[in-house]
Structures are given as structure tokens and as C-alpha cells.
Image (cartoon, rainbow, N blue to C red):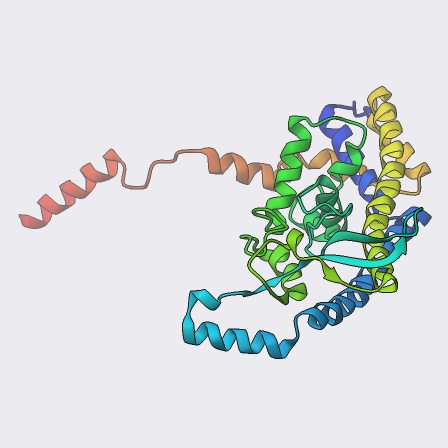
Length: 324
């Protein structure tokens, strides 16, 4: 049989099949990423239960209920209770070199796109966490949740921006993550809605530091570290896949014949159906199957109906004869 020559389409098919296997292999890096994500869920539960306790200590539920009653009775002048998912927590149990008590505080955002560094504003770190946390969901929607990890050493560029925007949109992100009345939808909204708590005041969270103990503060930091660890483990895992894919691209580009690519896949323990690769074109249609190809060609013909000019003349003659 004549050897099948490699072309761009066959190279891409082989590359995508092997890359998919790389991403689903049970490697140490992938397991570390999955464990980091499980730990995030655990830390979120612990930190939010603690946040509820700390917040309600400063804003008792009975006070919140009274103020809501006043709002109902007196309207906007008493509109001072709101729900929020980000808080400034502060403790005053440390001392400086002079022995004076110092305040330690930071911004903690429980939202999906919440920052990881204590800033009250949006950051790419928050997006990296969101993409890593919902990786499978984004992949299922034909998005690329690995874009930050893949472009880790690159500056912003159109390719990166395109995929970041697609992932953000797919998750329902729309607006500033720190805002208590943002316009998030979908998975973003579902995630955030779990973590809203009642607070009293009309100012943004930066002006209402909520008191906590040093131990409680440490637990909040531990939760935020868990989020950062997920981003780090995701980066490490994707780095290993990228290195494999880089070498794979070099090899496939050098191969002249499809059989060489099939041999590579076999050596890697990946089963590839050569006949299927050849039969299937880029649209997924098996065009080299005679039946399918015939159907495709027939579908391209603009056939005239049976009601042709000759048929119309014959029908007219029969009609005139019937009148005589």
C-alpha cells in the first residue's frame, strides 16, 4: 500500500488525540492539582463558617432584624443593612519594636473571582483561581481554562485576552468581583451566593474593619493560601503537559508519513485508528466511505422536479383531449 503523507490536518488530529491523553493521565502533578481543589472546598467551608461567626459578633442578627423593620417602616433613611461577601478583618494582638499595639488587617473576598493578595480590587490572580477551580466545566464549553498557565511567561496578547474573556463570560463574570451588587450570572452567581452575610453600614468594606482574634485571622489567611495553592498546582501540572506538547509538535512536524506519527502514539501507549484518521476530514464527515460520499455529492445537485417542461406539455394535451 502507498504510504499516506502527513499534512497539517493529520498532524493536528494526532496532536489533539495525544494531548487529550496527556491531560487525563493519572500523574503526580494532576493528582496534586485535584487534591488542592478538594482542599479549597474544605477551607472555604471552615473559613466561611468562621466569617459568619465573626461578622455576627459585630453585627448581631437581632440588630439586623430591627434595622430591616425600621427600613420597612421608614424607608430609605434606615436602609443600612446589606449583604456582602468580602470583608476587612483585623486584629490588634501584635506589638511593634516600641511595644505599641499594632493593627493587622486585610481584605478577604469569598467570591469566585476574589483576589488572593488582600487587595479589594480585581486581579488576574482571582481569574486564575476561577479558571482552575472550574476547569472541567470550562473545557466542556469549549473554553481554554489553562490559558493563564500556558501563557505564564508571556505578556498580554490578543490570543491570551481572547481566551480569558471567553472563560470569564462562560462563568458568568460581569463586573467588579468586590462589588456587593455586581451583575454576575451563571456559575459565578451560584458560587458567590453561598457566601453573602448581613452587614450594617453604608460604606464600602474598606472602611469597616471587623474585629477578630489573631487565631481567627490566621485561619482566614490559611483559606486564602489554599486558593493560591490551587493556582500554583494547576500551573505546575499544565507546565508538564506543555513540555510534552512542545516536543510532540516538533516530532510531528518532522514526520513525513502518517505511519511515523502512529508509531509514536503506539510507543506512548496511545491507540490511534489510522483508517479513521484518513477517512475523516476536518468537518468530521467520513467522506471517503462510498455511501457517504455519494450522498454528499447527490445533495449538491440542483435537480429539477418531475414537473418539467415536457411533462407540462403532455399534461396539457391530455387535458384538451378530455374536453373533446
